[in-house]
Length: 355
Image 1: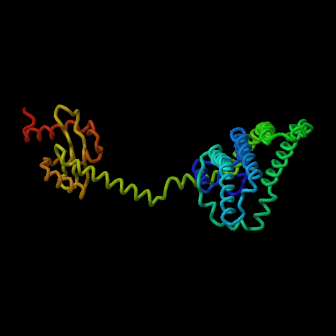
Image 2: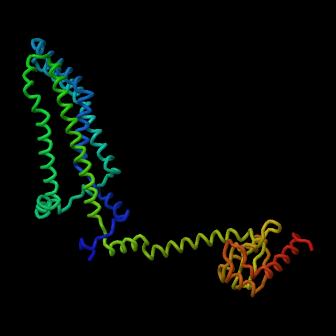
Image 3: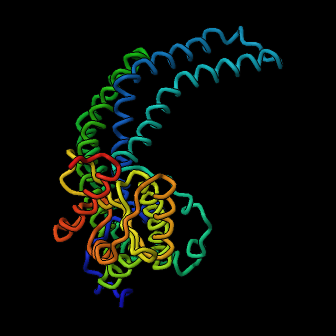
């Protein structure tokens, strides 16, 4: 039932989204990449266009005017090729850097980027012809084709609308200096890209919303999947039992470490032991620092004896305190009178209380 798309009516949990991100499955809108690439192209033309045209014109003029000085022997040819490559690298490098930054920015613009090695693992579905045909002619492929067709028609129509009024004046550029031709071409390209950028930005916004909607719809969960996830998140019963065991051991260790600080240990005498701490004048009621039966009680008595803590036998009180008192909490009100007698006796014996 969980595989039936109609049964998946619940929004995906954060755990399912996180697991999908680890597998590299995140909503990604191609139009956002196209918009940022176009923005990088516009920035390159605005900041570097005229400079690139001037450098290229200077390089071509140098080739033309100094053609007679270019050596065609192996050494000269190597130097010439190296110089040309260096000039072209300096010319193209800033453009490539801008495009690289745009590609990196695309990942952050659509959410937190993630690196998933799972997408690099070989999968049969990638080479399965049936899966390939489904990707090519499935519903998602038809949507992408419709988007591409609509975008292409819009871009071509907008480009023709911008360029057609300027085509009759293109012959006026004949005979101008390369710098003037470059400036005119740059201005035309900037105007065209600005307009196209607004169009592509609008398409990218719609595509981003659609991709996120489609992704969340694909990630929807059924009630059974939600219950299974909650069950898994609760943990394995054996692991939880082990965790409780470790927690109990640590609590017992802390309890035993507090026994030497007790004021008195009330015993059964052998089956029960309750260690109480009371500081006359600073505590309103005695606090239980340790309690236990059998082997734990024996250990409490041993530690109390080693630390010089008095042991007082009172079977009814020991049973009552063990049944109702809690560790690190004051004793119950019902035992105040009985415990007060024991504490007073101990304090008189140790000389801490006069009366």
